[in-house]
Image 1 (tube, rainbow, N blue to C red):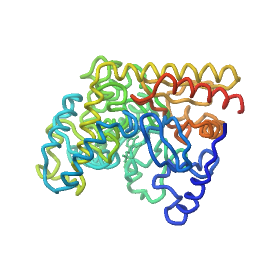
Image 2: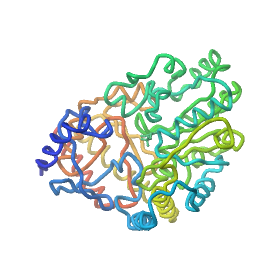
Image 3: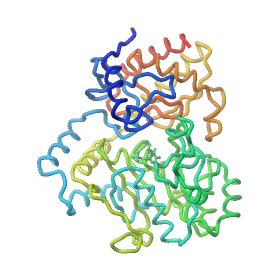
Image 4: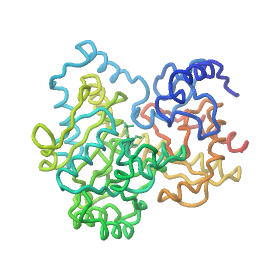
Length: 436
Ligand code: PMP
């Protein structure tokens, strides 16, 4: 079965005339997977969506993470409609914001205070500003291949989206800003120590995805986060966790409260950036952390951050509804089991067809890399067969399986996927591997 997409192709031609690259986020383009018109979607429900040619796809993109309960979940839709019927924006505080803030604080105890913003980019950008205000230092240390949104300060060696298009160091970021960012390899404490030995006195913060989602799904080595936190604190700098992908992805909580890290205190960050799942599919971001640091933020302190749309009732309501759904007992175990079944099926199908494949599974998500070595850092993730991935991506798409068009991005399970979806996906992968 090969799917035809004439309407998507026509819309793409039109979009190209009006929207730069035809897409409103470069990661949606198919440039890195051999080009062509991206699929234009019309409707989603559960684990599926339908394109403008009425083809159905099983979706593992989950909109790059937020759609963990599947498309158009009635509980979330109802919450959004209710919010919209009461007016979409007031420019005043609402009680809803307190409800979601409380839910976040309960699940992630390092958050003494939070502030809602509109995207992960804003959340990360502001944690950096706050860290600089608090420490009165300017430099930031980050890890190669970790993506932290598109603000100037973190578009250096910047993972998935930019790396997919071959522009990890964006044009338009002044050297004066890029010089404030030091990049070291993930999972390499010696490199972090060397950077802190040299620049520690000027370093405001060390920023990390505590479980990486942007050069594949990558766990920190045992002791890495503990070492990162203690080295950073010895240097008088702050630890910032970017949990925009990881929060509520693996369990009801964040990476910093995940059972894989039993000594929670040893890995607790000073500041955390959030986004994606906490908005239930509507635009959102949030940042938070220790009280004394957060009180640097206006109106209490001198670090300015604001937002006309911040905390809007629809996004907050969708977030509350999504987190309510995720409290159902066993819901994460189910996603974990489906991901394990799919990962095992992919691995077996690849082996049968003589295709090297490394899979990093973390609970209900995994990344699949065309290579025969482990993936523990960005360099190893770059050293995989992108051309083969591009062909695989298209073969899967043509059988109604939607993946991210990038060799660096994860496959995400939702609460809506079924065993039958997994079986169908393994069958499709078997065929795709046989054609590579
Ligand atoms: N941080 C991480 C870890 C991300 O994965 C992303 C988005 N993929 C961002 C920040 C930026 O979030 P947004 O796209 O909502 O600005």
